[in-house]
Length: 358
Image (cartoon, rainbow, N blue to C red; front, side):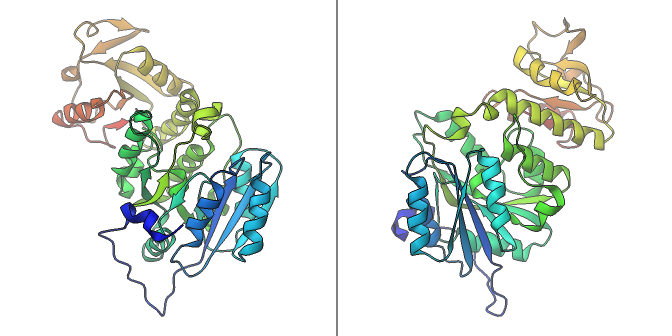
């Protein structure tokens, strides 16, 4: 695989400013792999083509039943930078943590065996961490590698993540969904000791880990270049594992959103949207001690009604900013922007008087 494969991903608008007296910090790339015989070689070749001068690749076989272990063994025999690890099948979180335990460098990059990356990925991300000591994790924009017509929902999600770049925007967007792709991140290895690695449970391990880190104050940045091709095969975990089901996302989101609210002294909220889906999302906050004062809606048929013992009001009935806090779970296409504009027109500030969670 040559550089021509990545022609559409060529970085722009970001110049490497490497000082020859201060080389880039070394990187350990952790690649969990389970039955990925069809894609693993391409993934590894894209890593071996990296311009970063000092990195290792830790390939963790998660108890595969196909040819993945043999492929790992052959790749490692041909390349000294590859460290093969063979583990029993216990899931991606265990495989990722196993790989981290074998890492020897200060920066750790995550990569999925289904994906490929641009040759400058490791260099650009390591440079960003070298130059920004306040940043704990740096991601990059991604190129969607699936069929945009057949997988329009995933493609739209990719477009959304690519629009969220700054630490502030990432922090404020994290309750909508994970605002970056897991295989496109690099972080400081020291953060594992401080805030813990991936946890096993009935939840998406990546979303929980990054929410936990942000809950501890870790700042995260995204580079504007599309440095990873995020493929969408039928076997991807987000399509097949119950831990990635919408209800699992909602539960972990409610936990960390409640913590975020509590840290700001907010114990009661007003929910924008009075539909069933929104109410189910909001009810999860009740399990963490957050009460609901009212629902806010623009449907005149709902305004004035009492639903689940709470009044439904219009946005115009909201009091002045500072007296109420609004959480919006409405996720229809374009609704987020419309609600943000309505609340902003009333003087409400994102992250101060309201937060988007859907």
